[in-house]
Length: 521
Image (cartoon, rainbow, N blue to C red; front, side, top):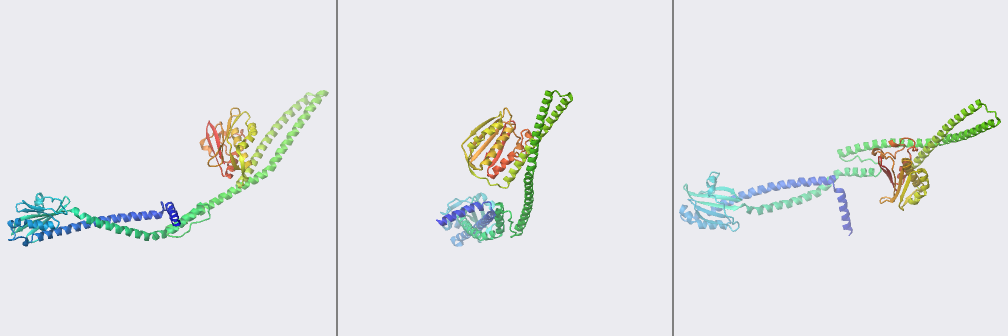
């Protein structure tokens, strides 16, 4: 059982690693080249053997004709009459040798014929080709026999002209079918292929270590590359092997060094920027708080001063000492105080906005420090329902529709509350104050635990801007005014919280049809 399981594992590994590998490609090329060579050699051998067998059979026919027509076959010497009389003996002698034979007299009249039981195919008549044959090269079979060879319709034919003293006494036509040669040819060819197959297998077994040895450095390159891919960026490819692998490893190592230096510099710059933002945010909190406090104090003093002026005006009117000049100066001071109050209110609002910006920057800095969320089982529907009063207060006249499924997800409750607040607030800010509609949907997710969807009927976002809405300080072109409020960090904070929870966030939007935010946790 263990041997079978080991073999199965070996097959699986082979299926995974052999496909499209350099080793398999070399083996395939070797097999193709060897097969082509074997086929070519087999074709050449087949043709050579065929030619040799044809020549051998020509000689056999010549010898058989010479033996059958020797002078001992004729009783009273070679003549036309003796040839006719000797015909039965000649036919019997040749047919016993497995040769098809046909005899003609001096006037080309058929005397007799015998077909071999091994090759009973009738001969092709040579009478129409007689004069053509006699114009070709002749073969001297014996003193009294001249032979002519012809191949026609798959048959090998030999015409023997028997003559004496220059006078033709008869014709002998011998032949056989070339199909008799094919069994021997096929047998030899099959034997050649079997031997070649064993040779190919034997050489392939020898070739396996020969091919693998020069590929070992390349395999080490692959192993190191896999470790680099897995995150071990300090690894470098081994500079070993042939010139090509050494050159390749050196080039890739140089490229990795350049990339590592670039990544290091970029990380240092990013860390410096993060540190600067964090330090600046910390440093700005105190003066911003002081400025806001001073603005509050000044506003309260202005209010007190206005009240005192009103009391003075009332007392003066009651005592009858209010002159026109005093009334004019009081009105001017009242106008100045109103302008100062407006400036202080603006300072107070902008200071509050800067405080919110600093708070968001500090929150982002903490999240980027890979803050570990305090995970707990949270019922998201209940959490959304607990935030309904805040959402309705922010929405005003806008309509909020809830469609919540009961979903429990493992997350940080405060961070999840921040996600909900930021996304819903963003949707509210980008809808019409009177006719705006925000829909909050909650579903279970197959990939994660929960899928939160927040849709609005606002102006929407252009397709080329959708991917950037999670960038810091980014505002879509349709929402760059400051009326909605915020500094463009709300969605960036949401994206960072989702990243910390190993979730996924994306948006789908169409201009004029609104936007939908998706959060998968």
